[in-house]
Image (cartoon, rainbow, N blue to C red; front, side):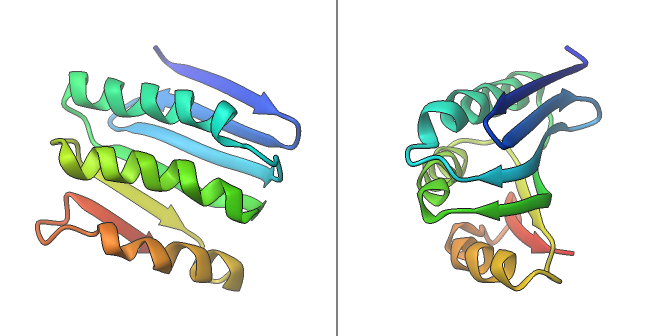
Length: 121
């Protein structure tokens, strides 16, 4: 699998399998229940990374906005990754205040071995 693109309204997730398994977030996540769209894609990415022994990267730097409902499916996947053996890095744009506020709250998922990492760049 080289690359797959999934779009729901104003949100696009691009899943690609290169050196790492990457999920690049673009646009705006404004759905009332975004889990219906987001969870299957993130679960597929987590499964693919686990089976291929690759790191998983969620890249939010191109995301313009996300509502609070978007955080719940992220928490579910981060929790699954923390219980499993997959390395997961969540990257966000620390220059955007709203991203910093949302993603620093997820730092509770950090692991001491940095297998799960939330990183502002």
